Length: 419
Ligand code: GLC
Figure (cartoon, rainbow, N blue to C red):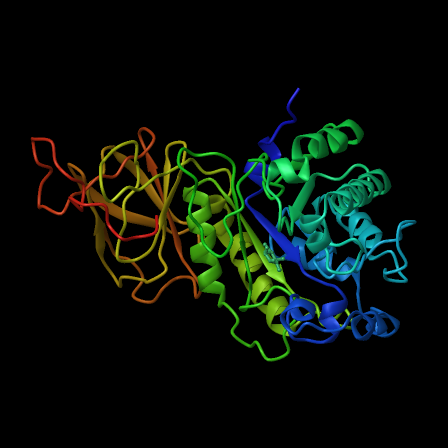
């Protein structure tokens, strides 16, 4: 029996943690490969890896404060350095950091995903040898399987096996069907991402927030600055409002946002990440959560009407749940504005961060809101909940009324837009 993905689809928001030996260098997680650092030089770093400020409880607390439901932790990145105790290698941290994270998350009711790179640059034979020579390949695959088996045996139960680093093989090359079966035999409930070449239980768009079509469970992984692993020179942090925008995109596409932090070499967290993630968590608690979690698929297709239920506005994105429509007012319109194109009756409008009831008048598909506060009632993002008489649908075209003949929605040609 296939395990249930229900919790995952409802989780919506998770914390990705990229931590490893590379964090000491502060030049990103691919540093060993990008700079072709000699094996001995890189291995020598392991003595300095004391993780003295790595605090799994603080990380799990941050995830909770941020309003997240799960944590995905890098047990071993492409550099091959294990953040757990293993019988299979000496290239590992002295502390069982994976165990610390799993325990801290479990205590707080957070789900846990273990990130693990299939390929690694340290162990021999490596992926290059495996590509060149079939007996090396057998050994390489046997080592990979042994690592995975040990990992899911040691940390049982966990919720997601998050594969990565599938260069240079496809599903056949990795014997991915056998790989998943081996792991599911140990942990039948476990979910897989698709990065061992198989589709897996969910898609992992990286760096963008596009829901797969046709829809299936998905999780967009996004960096907080521009780097996964700690980069000392990367100060390009996303603002809380950008994260709210991303959450809204995920909510309307019924996907998850897996937002990354990259602890420093000593394990301490970049202050900007703590600050920004907390600010978004506070907004979720003030009222935002209702518009973000357990929402309906609310598609928008600028090309054809199709199945879509949503549309766009100048003030901010829309999400929906049952008979409620949520309008995330990223740009406050001032004392009045209207929402047009509604194919339902609105019964009541409330601003969720303040609880203020908003007066309105509806004529056909057009709802006129009046007497709005002149200044945005929430400094990050006010949320208007429109309670409707049926699941809301909103449709407008590029014209001033809906044509009575078949027509393109906005764009007669496939637009060059990412949706
Ligand atoms: C990529 C990168 C890696 C990062 C991952 C996150 O595959 O190789 O460094 O960990 O994506 O999704």
